[in-house]
Image (cartoon, rainbow, N blue to C red):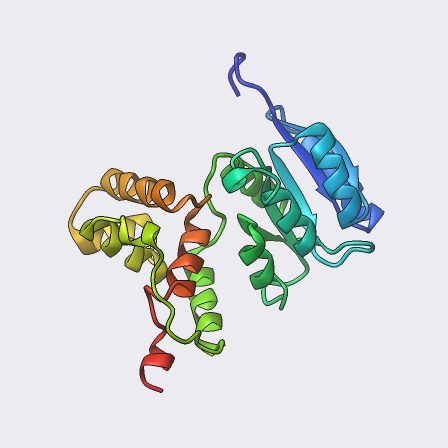
Length: 233
């Protein structure tokens, strides 16, 4: 961290004191992080975040008073397009947590296993603080499978914002929705990775989305992409 940059401000929300204390101590051991507050419930997390305005929230899902999904929804929806909202990193005990998908739909930027190593924790916070989504291509593909199992919405048409995408941007979005990483998209389209990043950035801007995870969800929920299982039904 350079002398002129500010540390990433983090709130840790979990109803287990050992988890809160452990993650807080680990994060505070790094010069580019500062844990500004902790919370033991979703409701407290919402109040705390509106008070201290953190950059990133480590958010547990199962908490009293208000769960992490609703807390995420309230925090991300607290400002237009979630522009000033903190980035939400969901904490889960295992990667097939049935609530992870709902949390991502609510506006979370990714998820982290509670058993993650310290280095994985540090990397996760830095990734989401930088504005990226913490979802490996494999996880994105699992989200796609979830969409395939959901009942199709009848006569869903892409919104006007989706129609504002150029042909190339639509092509990139379709590949993002397939779960391809930026390097994989670059190889598929025979362009540079920087070009892909530019296209993704423009897509997010036009659709008023926070990250590629939200772009995947938008592509399926608007009907731009139809899972194979639905096509063959």
